[in-house]
Length: 269
Image 1 (cartoon, rainbow, N blue to C red):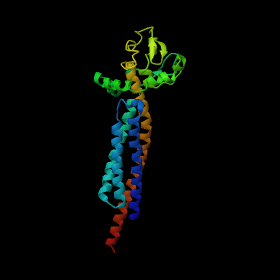
Image 2 (cartoon, rainbow, N blue to C red):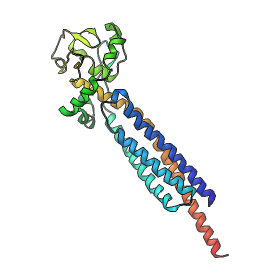
Image 3 (cartoon, one colour):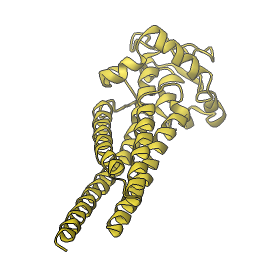
Image 4 (tube, rainbow, N blue to C red):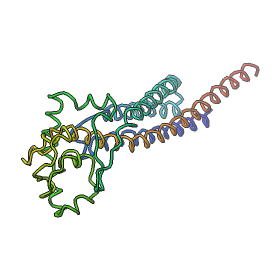
């Protein structure tokens, strides 16, 4: 029985270790500089990771100290955590599998349209108050100003691997036909009716295209890109948690079987 308890405790220690990448993923999403102006689902990830850590600790203690109530709490709690994490993984996949960019003529970067994203993501940036807060945050970052230090000629800029936020917020849409002066200063549009954002562009360095629909789209594209990366980590962790949980269930069942068999033998001796 002691050996079985030690095995259960060791298995549950793996659960403690697997909680770390979940929490780390949430912290990484919160600290990402490009997406620091919008918070979508980061805290649920951290909360699930923290609860998984608590449940795994309970199983670890219960395994080594033969505490049946703690082990039962672990089995029920970890099952709930696995279900919650699986639901989160599926949800993230569903809301981020849309919104791919489209190439602009003679440009290396992609441009994005707001209507190509899921309704859930669009609701995170729609609304005057919501976007006013996000816009003020974006305009206070160095995301756009740093382009002027990096690219001095039009051709260098057009061949640059710009991020979605930079393509949507720091310059006017390509279809407008603005003339490049520097990455955040453009003049003489050819067709202001080509895109609804053509008239929204402003050379004021605190305005730029922060009021454009393309800026909202670029922000959501950046969020989606980071969440797809995070989802890979969460999927791998979920699979590992399921394996650890199943092994733990088998070890717990074997331990109970050994205990019952031991009591049965004692009853006949």
